[in-house]
View 1 (cartoon, one colour):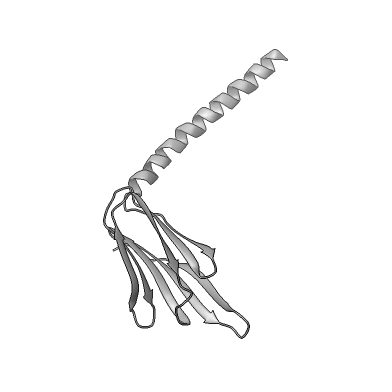
View 2: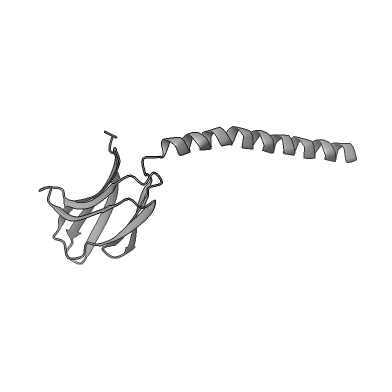
Length: 135
């Protein structure tokens, strides 16, 4: 019985060591590919209020803006080089339509589409992440 228990412990230890050994190179590869300042996170914190958080470990110049999709007019602009930063956006007073929250760090760009629409009984806001190719 004691031998079986020791064999089980050995197998568990060996499996854990293998898993850690295989996981480390993948994590290192992710870190080297993640120097362009991503990820970006957009969270709805209240009705018509969003918080945009940016991780920018390379401290490259990052641009954040809110634009109206149909006209391209930039309604808000901000820039930062901090390792991480965030901005709070209140869109309650904007007219109905499509807007884009855009974050550019180095050559990488993330874009989120925000649709504002007034319905007969209520006003709603829908947020969608859009895939943008790196330049």
